[in-house]
Structure formats: structure tokens, C-alpha cells
Amino acid sequence: MMATRKKTGPSTGRAAAKSSRRSGVVRTVRRRAKPAEPEPTPAARGGGAAPGGAWNGTRAAPPARLATPPHGASPPARAAGDAPVVRAGPRPVVVARGDDAIRVFSETLKHSGFFETIEAAQVKSGKRRELFEVSCKVDFMRGVRAEAEPVSYVDPRLVTHLFNELLDRGFRILRVVEVRNEIGRYLARRSVKEVGRALGFDESCYELKDLADELVPVELGTQLGRRATGRFWRQADFRVVFAKNRTDECFGPALALWNVWHTLATPTDLVAMEYGVDPGDFVIAMLEKLPVQFALIDAIHSRDGSPGGTFPYELLRGADGGGPEGAQVHRLGTVIAGTDLLAVEAAGHKMQGLDPLADPIVLQKLRKATGWKPPAEVDALPAFPGWSGIGTRIRDALADGKPAERTRLSLLASLSQADGRLFPPLASGWQAIRLGDSVDTMLEEVRRRRGAAVGAAAAPERAEGDDDAGEDDGPTFP
Image 1: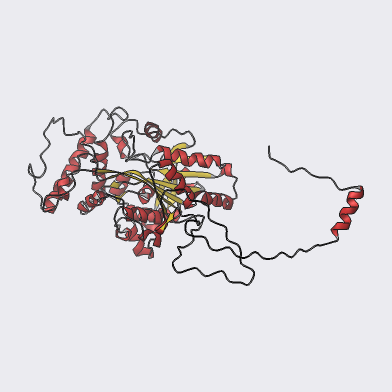
Image 2: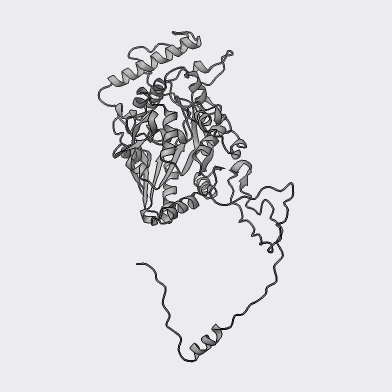
């Protein structure tokens, strides 16, 4: 039932007469203008904001209210040493860091203007909130085991917090979307719902949807032609990408744009690459056709490098023999968010110690095609503490190989981490054997190309029936 305002009846008798006499008199009251209050100090302006769009993780006092200057008077000049006023509302990119993951995430949503952005989009659409459709592409289908501190997929607690906030604000059609991938060829129980529930995505305040279940065409121009995505992604009124801060053997930083690439519902990414679909071209065309209104990167816990012992790390060692021995896990306590997906992506590259414009997959192509460059806030961002860029070095070491071959290495590395109780291997293992042989062939070619020794000195051959061949040594902690 909708709340209604009570109607009042017409005045009668003496009250009516008084009101009629008063209605003809207009009083004017001249008020003295209040003097303008002094401009607040940076702490009074909400000092939680740091230069470059970063936020230091502390709750700030509300900014002091400034009086409006009299008509015709110019506002007081700002002193040369004053910090700029922190503006409320949507921002291209915001970075937050702290010890409490939920609090950091909550403050990031507030300071980035997420709720103002989605509410403005809802009003512009003309739909009521309970009919406004929100789809969030969350990175979790590469997860092959439950992790107490997730480094392979987005923390489910953050997703639950996000959608609970939207429910409290009256939004009702809330979906988390993902797409099945090549891992399902090798492991059982790999539907989107099965994987999501195994990893902690409980659908308590949202629906889990597979983009490959209800396909719709998307026209992406003459070069890419017609491709397929999910109905729930195309028809959404508000699209969110929620990425994990991690690396990939093909992409390097596997952040927001990696997730846009995986809105291709069919075929899988590996098959699409074998057919000649360029991930960078697809991402640029897809963003133009189906724009993303908000992007998030979960960097609370992050992994840098290829998991397990699949990739031969001796390829990254220098002349002195120094180099990483395996993937590294970092406890960063950081969340990146913003209304500009490309700015959020660039911030992720910058904090991984990279130049965003040097990204060979997407951003470099975008720069050449449109002249795009990251906003000024990105330039001031620091690198993640202790981040050594192992994943990017792996990508560069494999740069001469085909994208499909590098994706097979990424797939094999994920399979080496699988929890057989959650996702048991399929009865027939011949596909896994073929995958391993293909990856071994590629790595031997990389060794020859880089001048590394082939054989026992470079990488001991895997003996037939060796029980330790598939064991995961696990990532190392810096």
C-alpha cells in the first residue's frame, strides 16, 4: 500500500474570513546577509581522501558547510598551499586500504559514489527500483578450491555486502553472472551454480546466472561480426564488473578488462582464440556496444605469478641465478573502484608496477585507436608493497607464443591446484594428457628460443608414473 497525504477541508466561519484577509497581504522580511565562513582546513573537508584519488582507510568527519557569498561578490581566493576540495559524488577511480576488509570495501563504495551512480541511472531509466535490473560480472570460475583468504577469485563476503546494500536501497533484480570455461572439460561439478556455492557464493541476496544458458547475439562490427553473450548481461540496466587482483599467463594483469573478455558466452576463451578472435579487439568493441557503468577490483589478498609448479620459473632467472621460485601471495588489504572502467583498469596496472599504456593486450590498442590516456589520479598511485611483477614477466617470457598456447598453460596451472573432493576429475583423462603434452611442447620451444638448456639441467623430464608430477608446491609468501 502506498502512503498518501491526508486532505484537509476548506476553512469555514471566522477562520475562513481571517485567511481571506491575510491572503491579500504580502510581507517581506529583509534579512542581513551572514558573513562567509572561513574555508575549512583539509581535515575539515573530509581528510580521508589522499592525493591521487586514494583514501587512507579512516573515517573522516563531515566537511564543514560553506556559506554562499552575497550576489555579485566573488568567492574568496584559495591560498597557494591549500589542498583541493574533495568533491562528493561519482569519481573515476578511488583506492582504499585497511585491515578490515568489509570496512575498506564499504568506504570505497561510499567515496567512489557507487550508490549515487546507480540511483541516478535508475532515475534516468524511468523504471521503478524493484524493476531495475543489475548484473555484476564476478570473477570466480577460475577458482578450483575453497580458500580461506581468496587469491584466485573475488571474496564472496564482499559480493554479499554489495548486494545487501542494494537490497536495503530498494533494488530487487540483482544477479551475479559468470560463464562456464574450459576447466569443465577436465573436472566435474563445474556449472556456475555448483562452483559458486562450493566457493561461498550462497545466493542469499542475489541470483547466480550462467551467461551461456540464455544466449543472445551482439553485433560487434565487421571485424568481429556477430558474437554471443548472455541475455542477463545484454538486457541489464546497470552493469558492474567485479575483478580479482591477480595475473594471467596470457593477459598479465587479469583485472576488469579480463572479465569483459569473459562476457563472451560461447565459445570458450580458448576456442575463440583458436578461431582467431583477438581478446583486445573484442573487449574494445564490447565496451562500446554494452558499456559497463562501474568497476571494482578486490585486492584484499592477491597472487602474483602462475600457481603450482607448471611454469618453469628458471626461465625468469637472471645471469646471477636470482629470480622467483614460484607464485607469491600478498596481503594488500586494498580495494579499487570507480565509475570509469578503463581508469580502474589503469589503476590496477599502475599499482602492479606497470605502465598502463604499455599493456599489449587492450590499453595499448585503445591508445592507438582513440588517443585514450588514464586520468591524472592514476599517475599518483603507488605500487603495491612487495609486488615484484612475476605474472607480467611470465607473460613477456611467453610473448612469442600464440595466445591460445599461453591460455592452455594458464588452464593447466589452475588444474594443478584443484581440490578433488569439490571438483573430482572426469573419468577419462585423455584430454588432460593432451593438454599437458601441448604445454610441454610450448615450454620446450620457449627454452630453445631463450637459449636455455633442454633436458635434465634445465627441467628434469617427468618420469612415467611419477607420483610427485602433479603435486602443487603452493605459492610462496614474501
